[in-house]
Length: 510
Ligand code: FAD
Ligand code: DLZ
Image 1: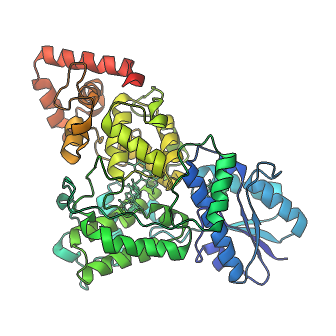
Image 2 (image 1 turned 180 degrees about the horizontal axis):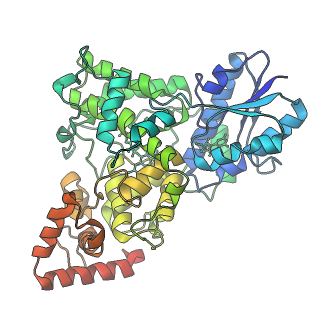
Image 3 (image 1 turned 45 degrees about the vertical axis):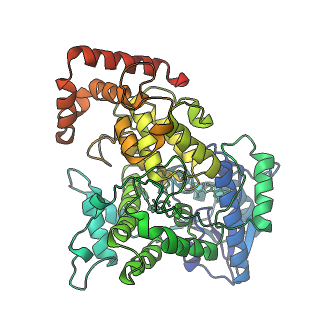
């Protein structure tokens, strides 16, 4: 036997570099559902079901394509509880020349795999992950010597590199790089939001759902009504569904939130992009084609492309540039534990209840719910970065450390001192009122900052601004906030701070 080819649960791409280098007539693929990967966080039940089912479907596709695949299905009594144990046993049994794999998407496992040659006693060859536009080294080169890293400038480089939305003479289509200013409409129910793409579970997915319910019953969320794609073909259909039904309004309502609709006009493609069921560049190409053929406006198409070749690549670059130290960052010195209602949704704050409830049912909440509701509350109340990062890693179907950590620790918590955002995304209840209809159905009154029924976001916002004066008062993008705060009569400021103190002391009761 020649080599073992290890494929991880988020590496389900036929073009995976480790496969491209392998010989299907000699080498043997290894895939394994293992306890260690299934339990490093309290993964949502739907996330576990999605990954296991997609892994099983991919293993079957590889076999149909002529590969020999050793596949371990999950069972709590399996003696091999880690990927290393599975590979070690096969190394003893099959005596391969080497283990080949593609670089892993997170530091935890990557640093383990880098040591495996010692325990296995054979070479471990790690191929680069070619499923991203920007390689790690290229990002490091781009970042070198820059005082500040800004997504917008990185994004322009990626537009030039891919040619996406570029004219033949090298200019951005529409004569603008970024149409974000057009993407901030409130949604009032019209046009109606499309139903999300659905796949009814087949026999493999039904088996996996049973397994998850039997062995991971204590994990977060519900496995009911599982409807995610689990194959490349289905993921491609999900992309087409998005282009046909949601993309035309994606830009306009990208920042909107609704009391009645979980998915709005979002693509719900992140689980497929992050596990290899969809390729990011071909996905963007299909979306750009919709603009060229007049099926979607430029603000929607540019906004979508920016999220993928801009934000998605940018956060990955930052992750690999700054790990492992990045995960320890806590520049705002937060110490508060995550309130229990993040796990139950049991809070009178309507926007938080809705975002957490959707997360528990769907293993999904859209970006603005993550950033401006659950994220904003964690920022304002000073939750420990490790607690809130672990929550996001657990509850979302698309959550993998390389993308979750920079978004949470950097973009939301500003715990990295500003790598991901030039100012914290802190907002009062006014923002939530402007972008949603949650406040109409809330126990609290968004127009009030003090009093028992005042929206907690209001006093917490000013409390945050006040207590972090040393951190932000010199930030030019925050000057206006400090000016507004300092203009308030002393008595009012005192009342708001007292309300803020009370809220922080009674956080579990909100
Ligand atoms: P759409 O709104 O349709 O956007 C299209 C695509 O753009 C997404 O599928 C995604 O691939 C990409 N994208 C958009 N924004 C970002 C971003 N900020 N970073 C990276 N990619 C982006 N995304 C993840 O894929 N995994 C995570 O674990 C994750 N954790 C997050 C945690 C927090 C606190 C925040 C604020 C954002 C997080 N995001 C994460 C980014 C974003 O919220 C999700 O990618 C998006 O909500 C997925 O839904 P969608 O596919 O419908 O996205
Ligand atoms: C997330 C995940 C889960 C839940 N289970 C497995 C598994 O059993 N086997 C596996 O190979 N991969 C799994 N994964 C994905 C890995 O944790 C993933 O490769 C890392 O998070 C790196 O991004």
